[in-house]
Image 1: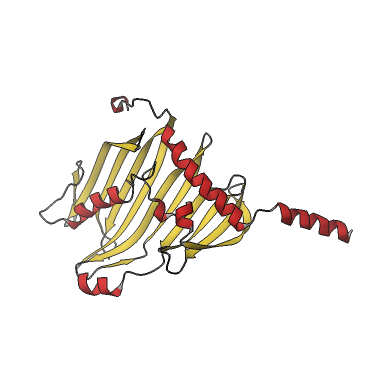
Image 2 (image 1 turned 180 degrees about the vertical axis):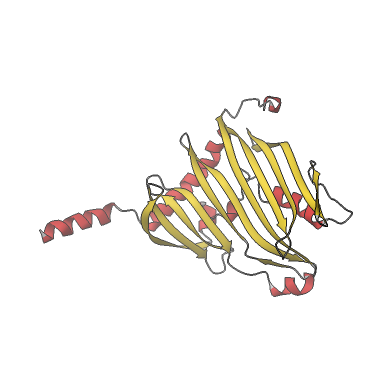
Length: 269
């Protein structure tokens, strides 16, 4: 009986992939997914919020886009925008991108910058910067990975994998990924900035970022894993006086399979 148990354990151990094998498959899937996602049109809804340090809401904005593939990336069409900003105790609405309520409106300038900077990476097929979630082959080289274990997550067998920057390799994030064991596709990833803003930057600009981090979840559409939700929350202090707690939330939905050589008519959406 003992020999039988040992034999079974050895077979299980031999069948279980190593962390290097898991990461290699994840990297391959990340590369393949970029091409597969180019076959889909979908809706993207982005919500931005700005709060003062005391928690008071001072600005929020919701943008809705229709995303369509083009040969060298994706085309992003703004189809709806509505926002509001505070002036004293009252709120005023606006419906134009990059709207600024006064001559110097840092909230307005940052809203447009965040909307573009965090969701409009032209090197990807979904607008999300792969540097934020380091699972591609290029990004994996910058990190040390640790397999924390296997478990059940939402009815799936998964690997829970932690990562941290490899010294002197350019990685910026600590984090954890939950990877579907069946096909080595990420289900969710969480990252936080591994290092603080350099002291020299704080001294010269009076600027600091605290709690910078992002999370992303994936949904299987047909046979393609697609980013479904993406967001982050952090506090920002600029120029010795401006301080905001900022949150970014994005949801992708309404996926429709098309073809790269199709002509997309946005007037139908």
